[in-house]
Length: 376
Image (tube, rainbow, N blue to C red; front, side, top):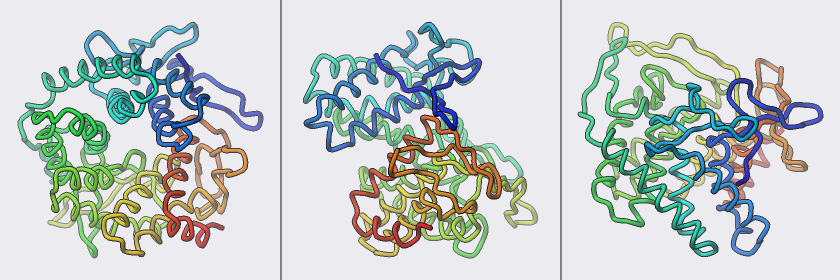
């Protein structure tokens, strides 16, 4: 099995371990698998194929007996079974593992049947536990700060979005009606987290979890575009489009954001705990993907322009006027920490999120053209 080092620190960019967590993890390896599999090189480049096979073997090795996944591997190849960012529970890393498995099985089966069979077994094991633990959660809400928060999502709309992206390839391959219905149930919950409109804060944004919006993992619009096309549901697409139309321009005009919370006060939704920083690659990539989705669905050039404008954050169109991603050496800095202070370390998440962004941008000439216009 192969792994990807979580951290590498400037200026030497030698690999580093996350104290108390480990040196490699599902969160990053699953992302890496997606990048390599989506590359046109996978079809013919045996070195790329070997990387995918090795990384996927790591994913498989991290599945718990209960069906969920552990996240971190520690020095000595010891699985971290106790840390709260690593436990075998319905958390981010299990959904990321599932996305790598479901998106990858058909692709890997063309090159490695035995590995694809093991992936299929791992997927079915996790799907079984999802059906037992999550599918039948009642569609109830709890009011927090005047806002009705759906309780059937796996912690929040952010994680539900990753689940949707993982479950669609599974359902396309199996025609599993229970999970197809669950995709719709998750999407229905995400829709309830959308607030505001073109002229009212937060401008059709989907809240990430509870009453909080955070940039990292704000994949709701991308997930709804994908689900809307899969389920032929125009409502999901229109809701996703509203966020792209109203919230993304606000994000650009205000210099991007890290997070904010909202509360309903005299029937007006007001923000508090607004943070501009830090800003990271994982906060940008989901918005670029959603803007490209809007472009592919509508063929409206304003969305390719928006996608390029957002992606230009990586190439200097940011508050620090700093090139965050180097097209020469592949280094992506970890964060704009504040103002013009940049964290020049380059971890796996930052690097892969940048690569995933540029990989998708490169497929759309008009988005690439807009990126060049907006880069500093």
